[in-house]
Image (cartoon, rainbow, N blue to C red):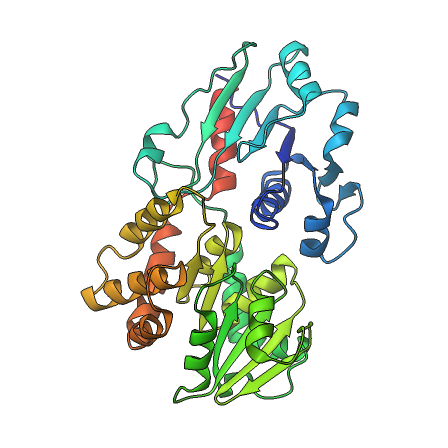
Length: 380
């Protein structure tokens, strides 16, 4: 087996969940190029989703640090496929790429990068060969995960240091001013809301408005915004719009770039997130978070949600574990939301402590990009 590091990697991403899929692939591509010295080509079938995430026009061509973005259809023009090809989340590869993998002179490694899950079966499937029905190709399953027997989670090498510098250098207030805020950041409980549509959201908003202390709700553009607009009763809310009712002040934010969204998670006291990318970043923020899992028609997402919280809450005080799980049942549609929120909020100090310990324990594992590079060294 060769330990030679592949020079060029190709990542193919079909955008299914608007931002979760491309969010993972864009972070991964940048990290592989910046930290592992690879030449990375990211092939995407929907450049609109990437455009808002980058904060600039998602034009084709090379980015700094050897990372390039191309449209999916442009793959037909690829002369030589990279030494490692990543098929993200079962989205497949263009037919011409598969043909070149099978017939070009050099051997390439084909990795099926799967969705993140905490279910027990993931460890047993991680790294297994995935035979192609037609060609003799090196193809393997690769699972992100929360235990050392998986591929780990996306985490840049300087992430924790960047977060510490942000918190110690007054980054919270600076970010708030940058987003248009004029008051003091720490004069309220700050909650970020990036969620799918939520049953009972209006009841939760009324609970915040009628609570004992000021609450600031930060809502980036997204699918939950029409529900917030309906509750506010002031017409369609746009970035910069504000809501004021009782103890609740809401502010609509533009869709943030990934670096700015990370900062929002670091700044807020509680983060409500959706999909895979923001779910992982909320954990690295070391703050209490509420995960709105992507709903599946056969309710398979409940098993995935339960598997994660079995791990996340293992060893947590019983009162905290019960409150956090009940809140997630409520947010994902199985419990009254107002009472679940109040019960979880009563445990907030214990939850903060638990969130920090969880993130630091996860950081003992290799990150996803490093795990992929090490796997490729052995497999090629």
